[in-house]
Image (cartoon, rainbow, N blue to C red; front, side, top):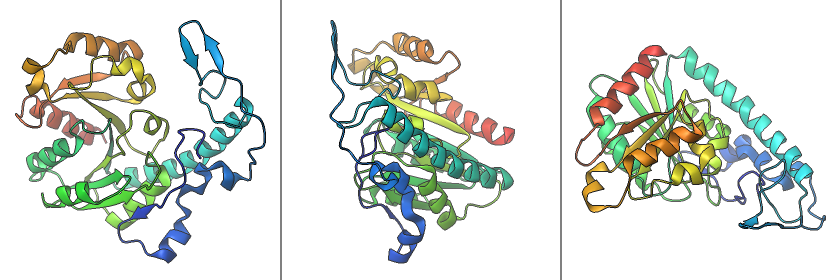
Length: 287
């Protein structure tokens, strides 16, 4: 089990892999403490009780795993993220060398990321070459939806893992072989927690929040919104049918990240989508 995010070892699958590919890739085995040679024989750290609730993530690691002290968890997380960051820097150098803009789209499940992507590809395909890396625990459903637009896509199935890491993305980039000057969209596994901590080598993290989820999400999951350059407030066409305070949601996002940009969009109605397309083109022009 990963002490950074709690995901367990699972069967990683990247489209096009065979068994020998997986053995060469060793898909970021350092994500799992057992692969680092640690043994879980210490008693579980005591639960810290405060007046307003139980907090299992207090201490320098800011997380909890049964049988591991906070100090050991910090050491493991440093090893995990150090290796991930090495891969991320390799990705970043490769992408910069090819003048490729990479965007990491993050959200909880059901926010509308894939619909947002398909509409974006259809709107920009005459001006930009777009390739997509899809992350899910299972199925190729989303990659199939992307390929139906004519854009190349590759599916990463993380098994029991709950986020993409830089080594997975590097392997996917090798298989996709995106063209110079193109755009790579990375649709991360639906999760508002651990993907925030993993640099993939992208230029920007973009968090997609649906108005069906509640305006307090930025406060509940501050690391995600703190890491993002842009928040897309999606499904605004549903606002007449919901009790959702748009201004409060934006205020909450800027409370944890004063620099975050916010766009209100609906992939279904098209509301606000031109502003999103313009943001992408500006980011691509900046390189």
